[in-house]
Amino acid sequence: MKRFTDTDIWDKEWFMKLSPKHKCLLRFIFDKCDAAGVWTPNWVLASAYVNDTNPCSSEDLDQLTEQIEFLPNGKVFIPEFIMFQYGKLSKDCKPHIPVYRLLQKHGIDINAIKMSEDIGKTHNVSDLLRKRIFEEDGFVCCYCGKEKEVRNLTIDHVVSRKRGGTDKADNLVASCLPCNIKKSDLSVEEFCSKYNLDFPSISERIAVRLSERLPERVSDTLKEKEKEKEQDKEEDNNEGGYRGKHSRKPNIKPEGKKDTELKNQYKEFVEEVKKMPDNAQKKIAIASFINDHKPNFIEPYADLWNLSTSVYGIASLATISEGRVKKFKTRVREPDFDFVKILQEIRNSHYLQGKKTDWKIDWDWLFENDTNYLKVIEGKYRNTSN
Ligand SMILES: [Zn+2]
Image (cartoon, rainbow, N blue to C red):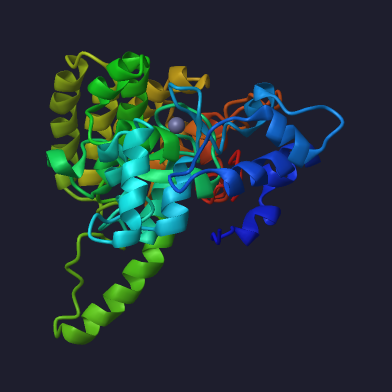
């Protein structure tokens, strides 16, 4: 039988790390699975082909859990197989009919697989946005919490498109392929109850990710694109004014009488925020305030910082001294300063959280010069540097 082979597999770090036995076993399963990507374990046969001194057994599959899924009947399913071999499955395509039949036979939810037609393409989600979401989510699946390689990550619509979910960043999270297939069109709550997952902690994780995913924010990669667009627009637009969603102007508005107004507005606002029942909601609210108003006073930033510190295990800001205000005012004016992005990077960095060394990030370090926060924003302290 002729099949596509992923020749890049040899260059993948996860594959390199496998023992020769497990490399061979994985290739064997890829080649011997049926047209739906399902392999019925036959350990005598597998051992004969792999021909390692130790015979193969189901224990060997523990090394391959990134690539395989177990079906309730004990068979092994390669979730990526269908997408890799056929791309988009279609009932109108004759060669795909037997695949559909096999999936049904194996009790694999056709609807879930239907969903997987979209995986990898995810409709209106551009490659840039995908990349941004993966980075923001630290290459960690939102549902099982495992760190994955890009090849094993997909974009999940928290509210599925079928249920009216949008393709916008605030509805998207990174998810591994198996989780995405299982979640299908289910709501997060339905998904968790169906698979016995911890709904409170998963929904908290989603809330944290989405709260830091401000729809209007432009990540570094997107800035490049916006620049191009902006230039195009300027050519078309006599006024030369850029009226797109994203402002490329410095982070804050010029100081003026509106400042005091905004400060008062924030004071009222924060009283409302305090009444909110959970931290995630509070964070969303304050992050939105920062995003909407680009305030040049320290309070909203300090409040957002303090809402995040306990989660990240870093020091909160107890006092707002004169010196801190001064440093802060300088930083916040710098065009690349992006507080929400900084928090995101802290969330995704074991190093910044002090899990790697004795040192951990704190407010004063972040603001002491014009390079520290930039290094954070640029992802220098990320766990994965793909
Ligand atoms: Zn997962």
